[in-house]
Image 1: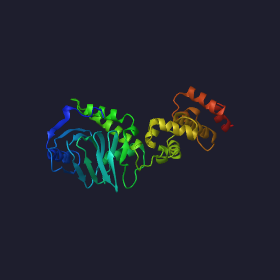
Image 2: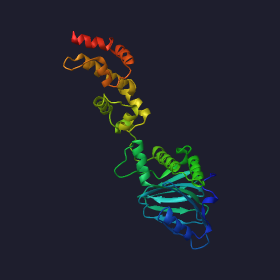
Image 3: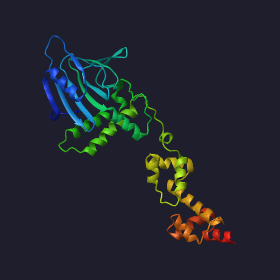
Image 4: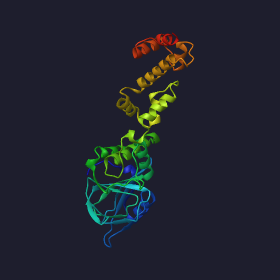
Length: 318
């Protein structure tokens, strides 16, 4: 499988002792043990880069090597077969992974892999905290037992993912390291994996796990005399501005801005109509609710209620 995933700039070992490569992997990529055949002299190669909270690793042992580990504990391993094949054993099953297939190892999965002589892999190490953060940002409900992926996947499930990893490798090997760029790309990787690969998450719509429309409406009612912005409401609901507009369209048939303006107008009308409320003049009430342009306010009021605000006040006094 032809792809540009780490070049010579990232080479740490070339045709080296597999045990030396294994020791390096233990320090940087994940704890494991290797078993080599009794005959032959396999020569291992490894390229490695750290990119934000990710570790990127391209590895080949140059021989039939068995890799085992009790569990990875707090990290996920995404392994892409580039060449050869790799026998996976687990859960009473086994499968030969070939180029184009993805192996995803969960933190509590024991590892039992056997590389073919020509096997080469690209490994992405992701901390569990990164996936948890992506769940929170996307408002996906994370199960109490933690996120668990299926073991076997195909690159076809992740359209454009190989290109994304190539771009990340280019950024990782760039002379100019920008933490903001790294953070941006790592969040994309986590969201793509969670959104496209088989797992145990509950993908509920944002409105099911964010404050309801009723709560947003209550906030507006309690702060009608304040300058309430759609951005403020989106932050309260923990949704994007686009999702907020969809929420108002579904529940109120209008935009957040128009909804707030209409509620302000209705409250002004209630104050002008109620004899128990002390009102000196229309201007005082209008300014109290943030209507600074009085001519525009009177226009909006008449359009909404069919009369000028002064008519409402005069009718109460008469």
